Image 1 (cartoon, rainbow, N blue to C red):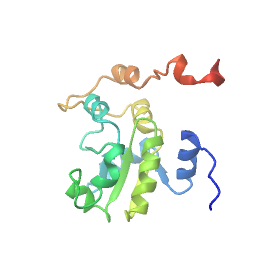
Image 2: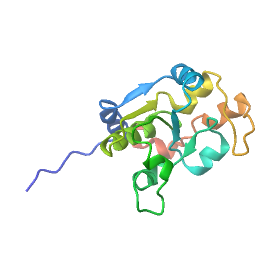
Image 3: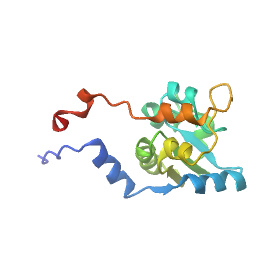
Image 4: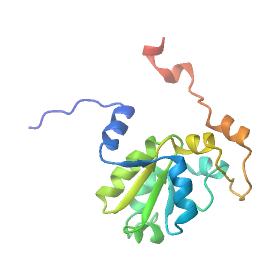
Length: 162
C-alpha cells in the first residue's frame, strides 16, 4: 500500500510546475509577436474572462478542457491545437498560475515548445500592451486595471486571515 501524499496548496502546485516550465515576460512576448508570426497564443482563462479582454489573435481553451482539446477524438478537440505540438506556444492566463499548470500538462502530452506568460495578462496590461474585447475593440487600460484588480472576499482569504 502506498503512503498518502501530503496536501498541497494551489501556490505549491504552481511552484512545483514552474520547476519544469519556462516563463516569458510581457516585453519578450511583445518582441516575439512583432517578429515571429507562427507563435500560437493560447489563453486558458474562462470564456467570460476571454470575452472581456484578451491579446489579439489568441485562442481560448479554458483550463478545464485543455487535455481533451489537445487530443483527437473528443467533443472539445481543437484540430489546430492538436496539430501544434511542434509550434511555439505561449500559454496565457490572468496572473501566470493557470498557464504554468497548463504548460506542464501540455509538455507531458508531447508539446515541444510551450512557455507561460509570467505575470499573465495583469502584467501584460501593466506593461501597457493592447488588449481587445470579444468584438476586437481595444480595451481601455483603466478598465483593464479594474478588471484585473483582486476581488477576493474576506471569507475567501480563509481562517489564517482572521
